Length: 209
Image 1 (cartoon, rainbow, N blue to C red):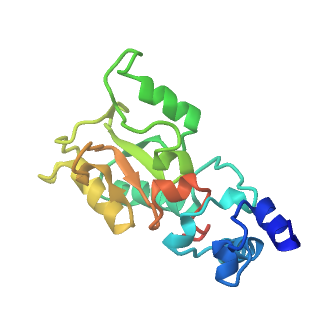
Image 2: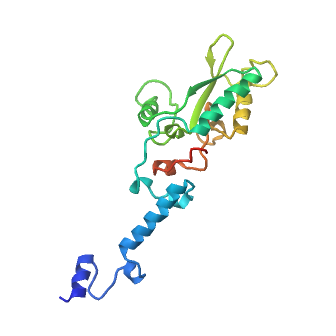
Image 3: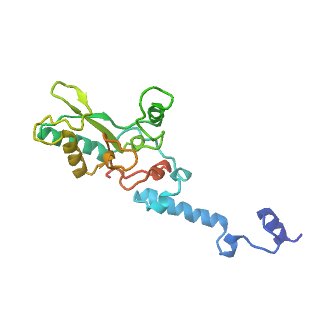
């Protein structure tokens, strides 16, 4: 066996043939290096194209765990509470960042654990798990937290819940009540154009949003 055929045998190709990468003039290691550069450049710039985000970022760098709300979401939450208060509505934030373990426990509710089904998302499948979502309710003058979408506590003839939603949308939140399949009326999120798959792949919105 000549040297070329020995090399082919190691590479797993037939004698006298070349790999696809070699036929293109780019050895396999060079193709991987180009892919790594493509992804790492996006990670450094923090403005990755969706095509780049299809590659798991943790292949190339350590991805720190999310432990709290994204700064822009936290700022939006505070503005929401403040602006609602100006029109006589007290907003109660009932959930913010939620770990994957907490998400799994919530998913089990109504599916083996007691209670009704409240989510279709398992751990890692919710924007809460990446600090990009909050849940809200209303607080009555007596301090009771309610989820009554028809409640008109400021007595202006409009449902307080929908007034809060309108404020949230102006602040950049998307509302779970607009979803077509599983409506989640307390849910507000800012996804910044990142899909759940992007987030599962380790990509994160820039801190400034």
